[in-house]
Structure formats: C-alpha cells, structure tokens
Amino acid sequence: AGAGTKGGKLRGFLAEFALALGAFRKFPVTFLGAIAVSATVHFILVVVYALCARALNVELPFGLHAYVAPTLTLANGLPISPAGLGVGEAAGMVLYKAVGASHGFAEIPALVHTIGISVALLCAPAYLLRKR
Image (cartoon, rainbow, N blue to C red; front, side):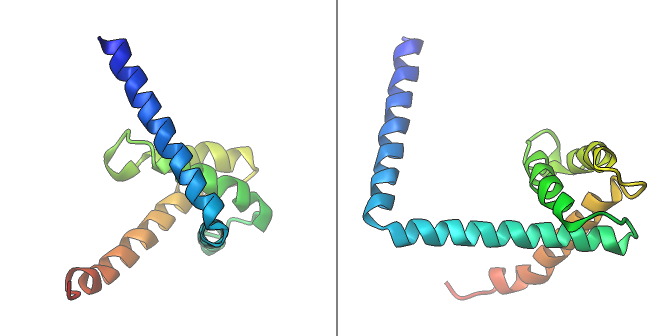
C-alpha cells in the first residue's frame, strides 16, 4: 500500500510541475520577470556579503563572494538548527578559508545574519500593522 501512495504522490507532483511549466509557456514574461527578480535578489545578497567582508577588513575579490554567498545561503536554509543559526557560520569557516581569507571566517555570515534580522525587525511593524 505504501508504494502505491508514494507513486500517487509522485504522479501528483509531476502533474503539478507540468501544469506550472505550461503556465510559464503561456506567460513567458512572468517567467522572465521571476528570473530577473531572482537574479537581482542574489546579486544584492552577494553585495551584502562583500560589504560585510569589507567592514571586517577581509580583502577578497568581489567575484569570490558570488561563489560563497549562494552556498552559504543554501547552508543557512538547511533545517539543522533554529533559523539556520550556527550552520551558516560553520559553513563560512570552511568556505572563507577555502577561498583564501585570512580572518573573519564565521564573522562575515554572522554579520549578514545580524543585518537580516535587524531589517526584519525594523520592517515588522509595517507588516504587522498594515490594513488587511
């Protein structure tokens, strides 16, 4: 019985996936807009990592952050610890050492987290008090 349920879930997922692809085929501007928004957000995240590194006097070429930032973002999304705290710092130690940073390994992602939490807290009243 378990195998049939898994197969049904897989078929349901594939059907929904095909439906989503069909929607993008019908509305390519929406698809391209989503890609543009995603690329913009990722670029901004790379800039934030680069600025945090610079604030901590870690001299690395900007291009290296384009490799490190998405990997650290993925590591932060792993549901290993609450809100990914600690995971990103540990990954930062490994990645920043690997790309040749001399210091600031865990501090860079910690500063990025601090900025993210601060922005979220500053914006929370506007979100929570908005009219529905």
